[in-house]
Length: 169
Ligand code: SF4
Image (tube, rainbow, N blue to C red):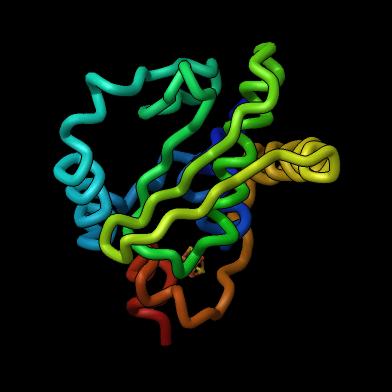
């Protein structure tokens, strides 16, 4: 049974097909310049972080930069175009932390290129939504058939763009 990781949950907010493809091992990210650039930002902008923050294993995923003293999950993103998905990814981390007994943690999404940050908290309503949505996402990623593609402007910057659209008559 495939499990819903926070990054899969983020994809699920954007495109269910993307989440299914990723969960089922069809991975184009190595060829995606956008993803490579995002990784570079994460690695170079925050070189000092490894010493300052700890890595935390949540079972289904790990948090790369966790400030245990202040109970803050730090997420670094390249652009805020998909901010709602970044927020849900971070809220899912907070939810998983709460399940582990770490209550009232918060998140900080950082956009180094934009020099902005977004603070994230987990409400009771969020928890109810996450429980429902994660169950639905788990059903989706374990189904045999790939969901239909969606036609959105952001397809052009998706790592599956060629897979979904190139060669299509
Ligand atoms: S290219 Fe579009 S339809 Fe295909 S996975 Fe990406 S967002 Fe979804």
